[in-house]
Every structure is written in structure tokens, then in C-alpha cells.
Length: 116
Length: 112
Image (cartoon, rainbow over all chains, first blue to last red; front, side, top):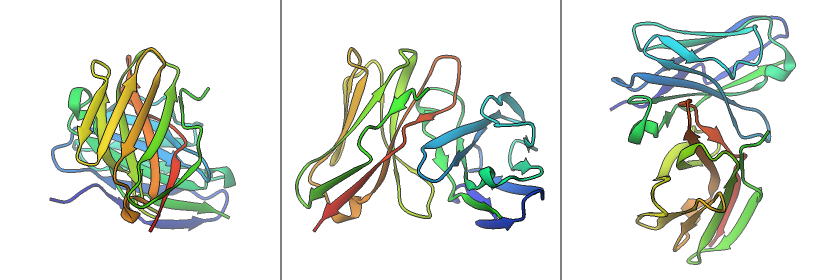
């Protein structure tokens, strides 16, 4: 079965432009998470979806960041007016549900975003 | 406010010996702990987990130990193999949230 996929794998953009990052979770996984990893840092939580709703958006660093999920499947993370500090690897993960042994989240390969 | 800490950024071990990776946490609401392994240019892959009601979980060469009173967990890999060379992240979850809180990772190098 297919794992979590993300596109693009790499994105270079100019400061001030908007970018969209896509995540396709594992089929049947109802929970979806976005994280980012900046250079030399651990993984930083951004947002969590259960189905199409986002009960936890606490990690979004500013109002330039938004995410949506449609059909309980694909999710898009949008960063508006990108800044150089947005440069990071953006990781998507999915899990069966939100608790118990389904705490085990399965990660995609990530999108490396570079803002020049 | 680093709730999950991995104080050793790197560790070097000889092939065949034991690797011990450590992790400390501060939030007593955490009730489930996980270890992930990450190779360059790949996403983290789930390795092993432990519930807070246990103090040990073993899976092949990998064993995770949890000391709740010390808020400390460790991952033991024995025997270590060169293919184990990767960054290992400790993560915790619990309370009202479903988000994983990650440590900053430990780079393990297993020397042949």
C-alpha cells in the first residue's frame, strides 16, 4: 500500500510569493498532521486535522500560514507572502485516529522549502 | 519551552555494541512515548513506542525503557549495525492534544 506522499519534494521561491504544499495521507487514515523541521531543530507541530476539521491549529506560526483538508483526504498547507525564516522541511503525517495505538503517525518524505 | 529534550546531539558506537539514546521530558500529562528514526532526505519512520503504564517494551534489537518518576526514557539498540546510523527522535503525546512533541534528535553513527 502507498504511504504518505507529499508534493513538491523541493520548492524554491522568492520572498513575498505564496506557496502551496500538498499532502496525500495513507488511505483510511482520518488524522492528518503538519510539522516542520528547520535547520538544526526538532520537528515543530503546526496543525492537526481530524477528518476535515482542524481541532488544533496552535502551531501555525503566523496568520500567513493556513491549511485545509478536503474529503477527509488530501491536505494543502499554504504560506502567503513567504519570508526567509519560513525555509524548512515541511512534513506531513497521518494516523488511523487520534488516540491509543493510533498515536503512531506515519510520515511523508517532506517538502524542502527554500525562500530566497 | 522544550518539553521533550534529547541532550546528546550525537553518539558514535562500534558495530555489535549497544547504543543507548536518552530522552527527558517535563510534562507529566504525557502518556505515550515514541521513537522515530530519520534518514537524510526522508521522513521519520516509526520505530517503537511505550505507554506510560509500562516501563519496558521490546521489539527485536530495540528496547525502550521508561522511568516515569525521573521523566526519562531511553532507547537501547543491541547489537548496533551500520544501517542503524540515522537521526533518532524521541516524541511524546498526551493530555488534551493529539500532537506529537518531538525532541531535537540524536545523530547515531555506528562504525563498522
